[in-house]
Length: 259
Image (cartoon, rainbow, N blue to C red):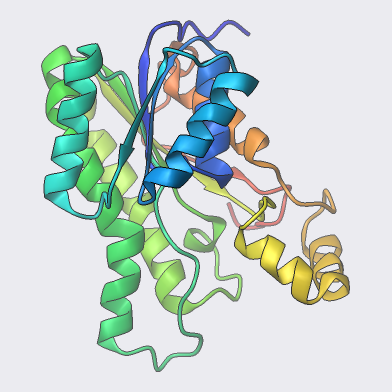
């Protein structure tokens, strides 16, 4: 399907590895220009070189290192994007950490940390990007959430609550900015396997138990890949999804049952 993304500018938060890296590669494959972001400048440089080779991204990649949970840095990153390319068409808010304390005795400090990493970072980036999109009267925002935000699946309570907050944020924001031409959607991935990710670490520690869980809980009986999540994101960001906003699209191999 032709997505008409040639020369569009896509800002992909958290794109030095994993799902974000896959999303950046998918945008580049569609002819878009891509902003790679992450905390580690060295990792970003490696990711940029990989994408220049794998997706022919030479001349179409801008790297910006820093912590997007810092609102000032988020504003600076968006300003650099606009200064470099003069536009911002797509924003992918791919931020967060899956680690937290299990049980109900979490403590306010941990609640604040989990929400800062999984909600405030995304909100800061979106709020930095929205003025340019609203001025243009067009734009697409895709928030990366998790299936733990739509069903209780045994994940740490604070983490699930933070991801549920992202779904509510997506729907509320879509309602507010839709009249001005900006679409906002959420993608909730299931279990995605990639080097350095949490599932890769679990596979190293206890591969048999992990395989048993995946085969029992996921009807497709396998992990997802970053490329499979990226395909959903890039579609939502494109004009082919022009009538889709305020949605939470689940990509989990059938694991969730209530949505």
